[in-house]
Length: 276
Image 1 (cartoon, rainbow, N blue to C red):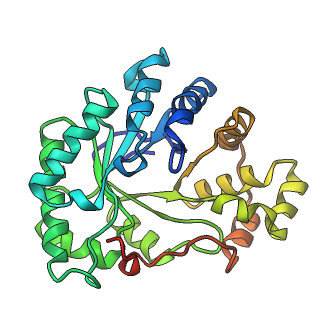
Image 2 (image 1 turned 180 degrees about the vertical axis):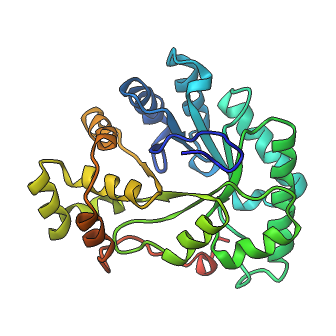
């Protein structure tokens, strides 16, 4: 997919959330050698160093690998965000980051100055982008109610919003908003930690087509115009998930999965997360 600034982002990403540091390097190396070219990490995951080691040791040209990391909540604000990026870049050991995201919005439920916190953080990301230290900037877990105030003072519009997106929880209003504002949507937890894989609609489609349930769900996410991010430390599963790029679901199957409700997952309201 192309971002609004013309940068290309691979249409599936390899996630590293809750991946132990001791497992991260080997798993990312396995992913890269299997053909994955989009690696997603975050300061909060505490495995940026291992991701960077894998990228450097893979033997693959840096320009062929798309690396994302994120600004954690405790570091929001202008100066603190800049310092946090310095730490992330040092941990990664990379000359630049392909995509830098604000991990969660400051919430009006917990902070009166939430608009200013988000705006100051965004100004820091704009500076990093102008300086060429990041190739693209965006958001994570931001809903339209958070994005609209941000846009009022932004010089550069966000290029990405990474949200919880899976069968039964499409967040259609946010998806439509992002499309209207030329933002690519990424899906975290598209497989809902495996909860989606036993649903009879999904297993039925998988059995009829001769693909695995995980491949069906990942194909569905892509058919929705969304970039799925999925994690595994098992080499066979890493290859299996990537193979979903070759599956194109018919419109009836896409509609059947899109109609599902209460499949599982966290179904977070970002404003109600008390760690914000």
